[in-house]
Image 1 (cartoon, each protein chain N blue to C red):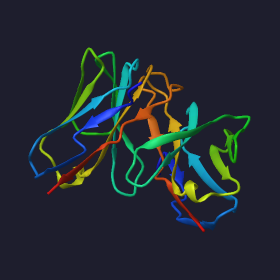
Image 2 (tube, rainbow over the protein chains, first blue to last red):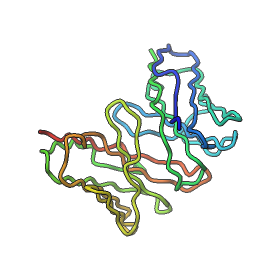
Image 3 (cartoon, rainbow over the protein chains, first blue to last red):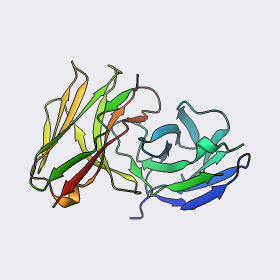
Image 4 (cartoon, chains in turn yellow, brown):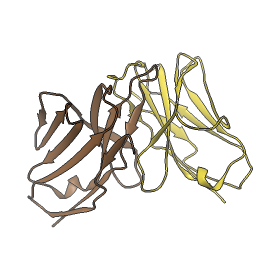
Length: 114
Length: 111
């Protein structure tokens, strides 16, 4: 069974640019959640996708957007990058969208905005 | 006030020590509770779920007090391999059932 994978592992961008991060969910999982983890902080919920539709969103501006594909893989897009967007971006998949479902995290994409 | 608050530490303890982490949460409607472990520069991994009756997994014991909105984790007989950041996590009600993380408590077990 393949776990959650994310690409790229590291990325360096400059302010104002746009970035796309990718996530492949674990086999059999139809729900993907994205989190942002700044240095020294816990992960913060960005949004969740369940069966290709956004199923909830945290306190992030509209320049953070996402997609889920029919194979349940997902993308996170961030437009107009700001310095504060520098963080570890984590994707987590789960077999359902209920709160009791364990979420399995990928290794993350470390984004640096200069 | 943060939704989930933890003592950031760091906790530096000798091998074999018992260490306790505490966590409080602000949303009384929260329904599920977890402790995750995160090693340096790695992804968080579920350590254990926390139930109202308290639960134990080997050297780890988790307790939940819904009335006080308080969660704890006790690690007995600490090992070097327990060194990590421990994240208190609460599942918030709503359609997304999102996980809300505390900032984490850093533990270093010393030889």
